[in-house]
Length: 101
Image 1 (tube, helix red, strand yellow):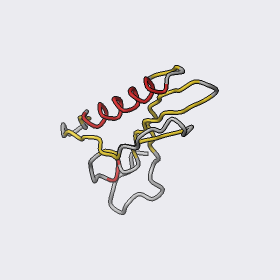
Image 2 (cartoon, one colour):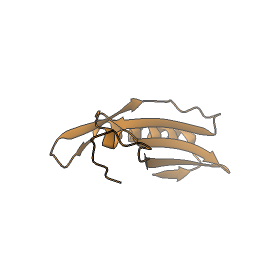
Image 3 (tube, one colour):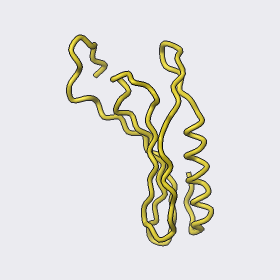
Image 4 (cartoon, helix red, strand yellow):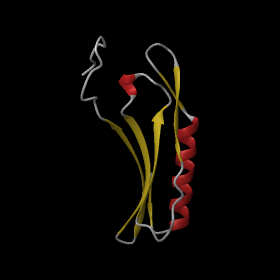
């Protein structure tokens, strides 16, 4: 999303990306809309890594482990802003629920 040596530009990209993701929605198969919810972690120039996480604002166990991370990383005189989407399948499927995995 961003790569360069300017912390202020990287921090601005990191902040804007988080706020854009928090205001977007996903449309599920049943046509319902789900927004991302999460807490903002401000970046500090002296930190080599900052991450803010968002989760789907839904109680459905199918989506419980979905997480979107926005991170600002400092590596070898270069700042990078990245998005990671993580989904870990549940270890145990609740009784009576059909498994998607």
